[in-house]
Amino acid sequence: IAGITQAPTSQILAAGRRMTLRCTQDMRHNAMYWYRQDLGLGLRLIHYSNTAGTTGKGEVPDGYSVSRANTDDFPLTLASAVPSQTSVYFCASSDSAGGADTQYFGPGTRLTVL
Amino acid sequence: GQNIDQPTEMTATEGAIVQINCTYQTSGFNGLFWYQQHAGEAPTFLSYNVLDGLEEKGRFSSFLSRSKGYSYLLLKELQMKDSASYLCAVRENDYKLSFGAGTTVTVRA
Image (tube, rainbow over all chains, first blue to last red; front, side):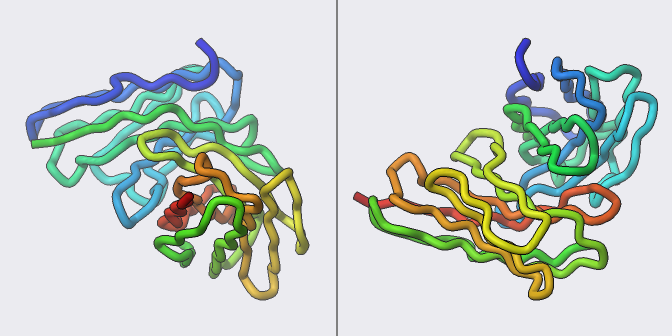
């Protein structure tokens, strides 16, 4: 693994189903983030984690949950998917939350909820 | 929260220069980033400004005026591969990034 990986690449999901999007990074970055990207709205932060064991809510957290059991993994769970959660989901990481440390993005997961 | 405004689309000719403006309103500014995103791909980092002035990196430059809440990304000697979306992102004192909707640049031969 090099950088950030996400799985699955794409998924079609029935409304009401539970879904976990996986994100793994091998850069030993402390901070990790989940965004959704919708046409005309840009990237919006769902949840973030500044370090393993801590998480926080972003701009659009409702309907999503995260956990950060270790440094490398940051899964995003949709407990009961709804059509409005159809989007492209990007995971990102950075060495720290401040300074010039840039965020590196994974390849994204395209999710369709029917 | 943030108000980040950038034009939706811009078109330019190969070899030309394009300037993408970004204006923002924030209660606690802590840096401005520009990302490039090709269609169907992840955003990739282009530049970072935290102090006023111009940062130059090859064909790309980014300018910041904190007092005006204004930044621009300048793309020189445009190439076809520069056709992409360009995202302006502002970081506040809580260290979270807020993104603009992005500017789609189309480079024509």
